[in-house]
Length: 129
Image 1 (cartoon, one colour):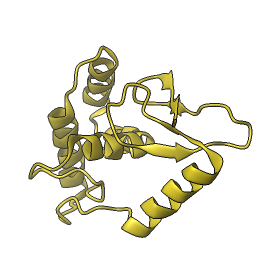
Image 2 (spheres, helix red, strand yellow; image 1 turned 90 degrees about the vertical axis):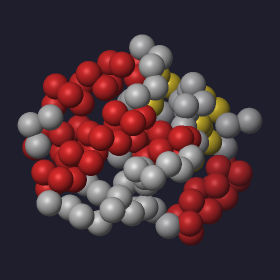
Image 3 (cartoon, one colour; image 1 turned 180 degrees about the vertical axis):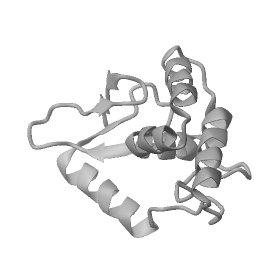
Image 4 (cartoon, one colour; image 1 turned 30 degrees about the vertical axis):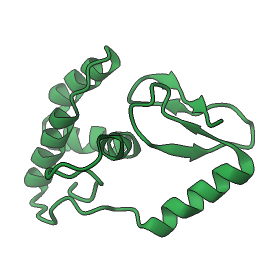
């Protein structure tokens, strides 16, 4: 999986959580492929209880990458240009953010205006003000 924005060398926690959220579905799938579904589920449960095991998520993702033979040092998958486009769309059309301000992830509002669900926390995302 090594293409997430999570760094083992420190970095901003909000960016780390944003990467966990953005890659949540893929991490679930890849954890299953690597035989790590129970560990993934424990992390989900722990996060939803309000604990902040970012380091545990980083370790899980590293173990998945190792399983896959991926050695690209967890490089950022999304470029700055993509982030700028999302921010511009949010400014024009409104958007949503992490419901607990755990991460810095933002998504553009859907045409329906309905808040998307944060799969990690199991809650509706909060409107960007």
